[in-house]
Length: 215
Image 1 (tube, rainbow, N blue to C red):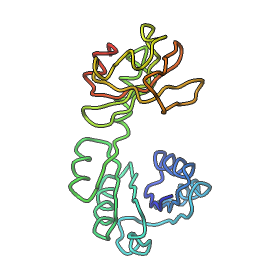
Image 2: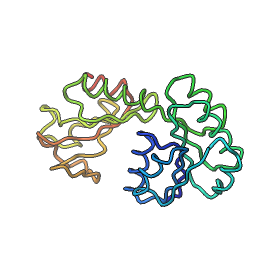
Image 3: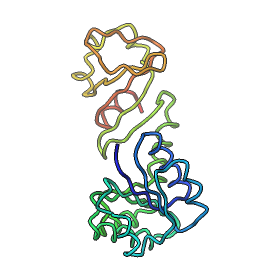
Image 4: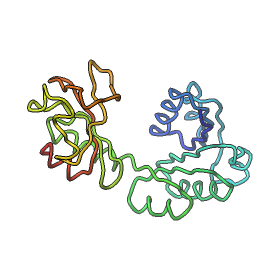
């Protein structure tokens, strides 16, 4: 369990609060609008109405006590940038800020953000890959060169064991999980036989995955 400061409670910030609550983390939520603060009260440990560009207000929150500070201000980039910078100046251990454009990402990284999330860009890439190929069920980008796909077991792989397929040597990819009846099995052995209708998680370089599965 982590202690998290969440600043900015628009639609994206509210969803972040809800998911953090489901994961069991302690969340302090902050926004300058009373209605947005009230909307997240069921999902957070504590909440305050305040101006996150005010250094005295941020100091009163005890910034150093939070494991992560997440800035999800979406409609006022100047406030997002000032908040990000102040958090780092006040000793924040980890600052994650939201960007809506490439130039914003660059400014945030230069002014205190340890990491930047770019929801629209990240979701756009996921959508393009997920729905442009019939056999991709999910996709996670790990970095610019590596990704993980969830795909159905190919028909010509069904009935054969992981060891027989030897995909690491042949295709330079790894099968890291198999999903059976909605349950993910991560303890794989070379003797495990793949079954038609099941799905599997495969990990590797983008170009190797694309070549192997004709993506």
